[in-house]
Amino acid sequence: MEKCKWKFRKLNRKQLIVFGATMASMTIHFVAFAQDGMAGINEANQQVRSYFQAGTQLMYAVGALVGLIGAVKVYQKWNAGDQDTGKVAAAWFGSCIFLVVVATVIQSFFGV
Image 1 (cartoon, helix red, strand yellow):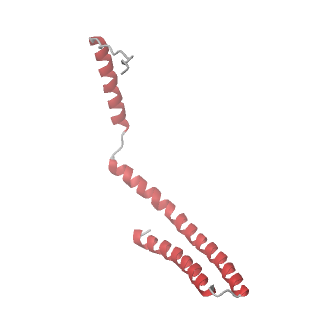
Image 2 (cartoon, rainbow, N blue to C red):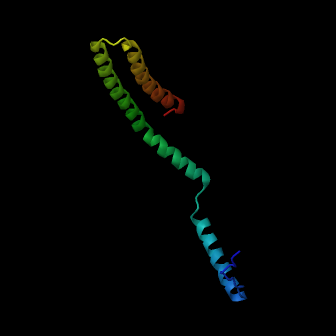
Image 3 (tube, rainbow, N blue to C red):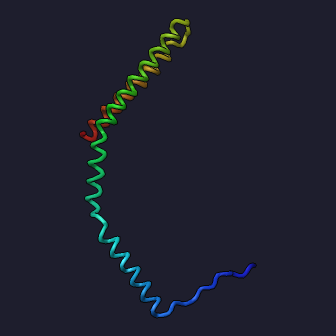
């Protein structure tokens, strides 16, 4: 096994005092700038609630876009005479309903 190249030396009394004072001042500095835990949680709560309405509107827009794409797909299958048109229509319609219901349920659940 290779011998360790690093050599650690002992700190003298003056160096220990300077090191301890530096650590103490850093600790006091971080404690002074720390905020109350509840204040941080309340601020995060307010931020999430402020974005919630925009998120709900985005969910509705995505549902509308998925609905339009699904309508075109179903129309193409219907005109082509495919046998599984009903299954495809149910899947696309179900995904649109799911998006709208999820947005509404989340909005009512969180009371926003």
